[in-house]
Length: 126
Image 1: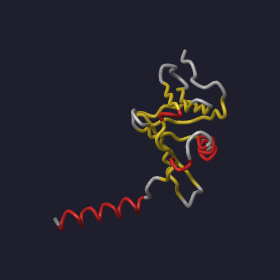
Image 2: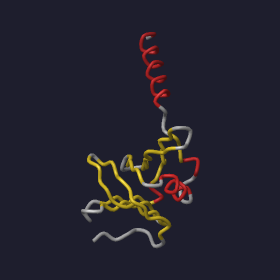
Image 3: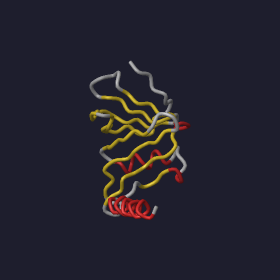
Image 4: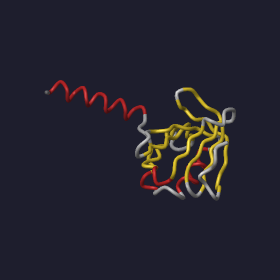
């Protein structure tokens, strides 16, 4: 069995991890880090200490009414994407341990399209 890195737990909630295939389980947020434990396979888990978190990226839709998923970008291991039952509660719990300036919104669909058209324009000028 996997041992938790947290000594004090703030929030435990049902969640989905998007790691290649979707894994269903629980997210645990505590004083030492962010953890995801798979519901079926105890060997599939993700533990991210707060010192390792670089950015938390939230996908916000309908002016903040709906947050379908959020991602945790680490300094060494890459980006991990999750969704949960109550994402606002999860992000508020993460905000206690991560500097709010490192919590950002992802780009909207229109922002991505604007960047694509601008980059096409730059390539033609060269």
